[in-house]
Image 1 (cartoon, helix red, strand yellow):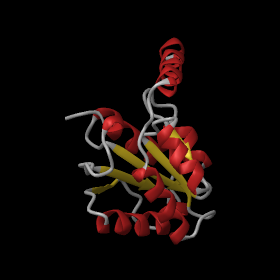
Image 2: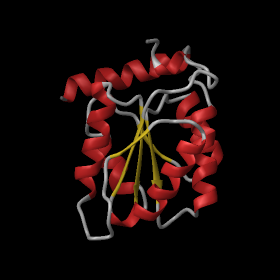
Image 3: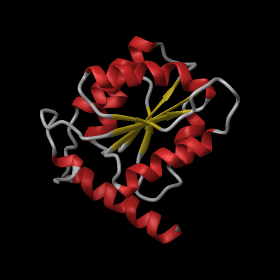
Image 4: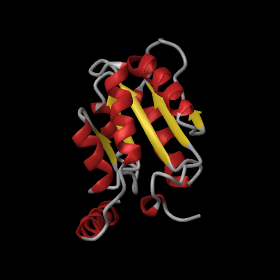
Amino acid sequence: MQPFYSRSFSETFEMIIIGSDHGGLALKTALSSYLKRRGFEVTDAGTNDDSSVDYPDFGQKVAETVIEGAAELGILVCGTGIGMSIAANKIPGIRAALVTDVFMARMAKEHNNANVLVLGGRVLDEQNACDLVGAWLDATFEGGRHQMRLDKITALEKKYS
């Protein structure tokens, strides 16, 4: 299997894992449906009701699933996206990008090769969130000078892990 960053959009990803806390549940549900309509296989990492839960638990589950290779990409949703992005980025190898517009979503993939997209369920409406996910999925990592920068991030992870 070739690495995800070298694939074009026409080569469908096998698996996307999506998770949320209670603040992102409604948006996670809508995004799961959107992804399935686009032909992606989606694994739901929870939460599955609106009871208060701790976002780091779901950020960890999604991030570890991506790092282990059981899913190629992850999407996380909490109230603002801030907590999930902090939690997921603690896992070495995860490049979780919190985005709020289409340009940021595209750059998250093209320049940063983000393997996890993070959204705010209380910040975005369903249509905007689907647009962000679509822009991220449709973008392709550019490599080159951007890969050199990611290599520096990997070196930082190794130094401080």
